[in-house]
Amino acid sequence: MVVRREYTFGTLNREDLNLSPVKQFSSWLDYANEKGISDATAMALATADKKGTPTVRIVLLKSFNSTGFVWYSDKRSEKGESISERPSAELLFFWKELDRQVRIRGKIEMVGEEEVRDYFLSRPRESQIAASISWQSQPIETRLELERRYEEFETKHDSDLVLPAHWKGYRLSPSRYEFWQGRKGRLHDRFEYSRSVETSDDWDITRLQP
Ligand SMILES: Cc1cc2nc3c(=O)[nH]c(=O)nc-3n(C[C@H](O)[C@H](O)[C@H](O)COP(=O)(O)O)c2cc1C
Image 1 (cartoon, rainbow, N blue to C red):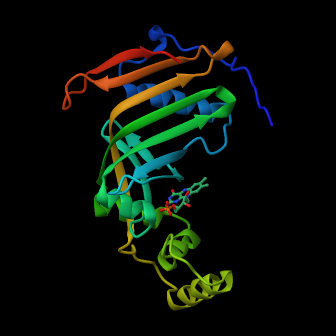
Image 2 (cartoon, rainbow, N blue to C red):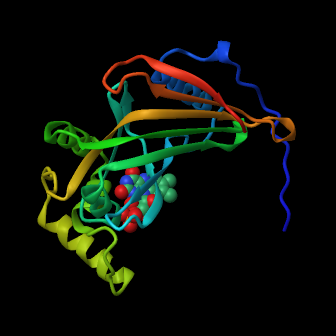
């Protein structure tokens, strides 16, 4: 099947860009939300293990600022293992209706336990239970077994739940961003932000060929 679509939603010019990439991201995310894009905070998280084997999956962005982009997961999962071996990754947002893609690359650090606990306790109880009883990415014989564990846990814990030791927050600290705006005839607009000095908050902005 051949899929061919023209990208005509908009344009991206140097003068439209905020000098701060996190502000640029924030304005694009706000716009995606204003336009009613569903799951605008869903991002592909690409990692590699110590052998260099790449893996990718969707996670949800839960907070961000100039220090980093945060998501939560099970540290025992395949991605958790990869991140502990190689704490670098790239995030990718694709807002199809806007013909926009954002890539954010950087190093990963663990979020402090207080912040993780606060977020965990703010989640709906059923999400807390699911995170508590699941060993993410391990095999399980049947769905029934999962449901049995859920119910058993729920009856044993009628009061507040505690943060499971395996449930972690990850923060990617960006060293490179790329903003992509699809254009007609495949002459897309692409701008890369890279840090002029690794530790500074000055960013070089470069237009890339499509
Ligand atoms: C829309 C969407 C949101 C998701 N959000 C998360 C998330 O925030 N954290 C998470 O661990 N997995 C999330 N998942 C599940 C992951 O994609 C993945 O299946 C899981 O984390 C196991 O990945 P791994 O085996 O590579 O570690 C989400 C999946 C989808 C489709």
